[in-house]
Length: 135
Image (cartoon, rainbow, N blue to C red; front, side, top):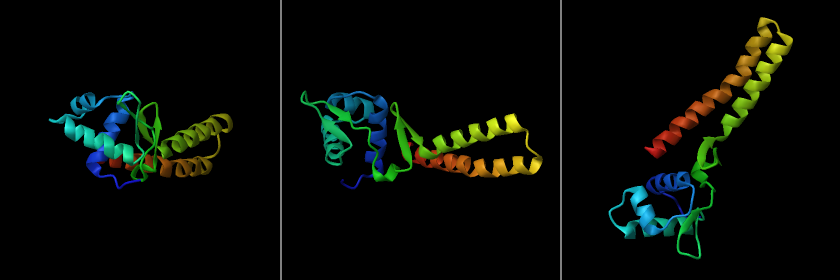
């Protein structure tokens, strides 16, 4: 896979959110480029990197794969989410269910909070990094 710049990564995330195949002119309008040549070069660069595929009709479709820059994220229905969000939600629901079912003493409750909190802190940190990339 070719090295992917931040500008290319931002454009890829926009194209990924679009969620359907698009042609060069459509990509040009979506990304706000002035020339279709720039959009064509970007789409070709993404295709070489394995992030887009060129269809038989000449349009391009996102593969849904993320470059190594975004290894901490997962794509769900065109939305990029931190992987730790899944773990944080699961551990929170599990801890809440245990708390409601057993009503444990305060020290156990504190331990549950300390087990779940690092996941949520990581989710917040990864959201901030993703926003920096997408701005």
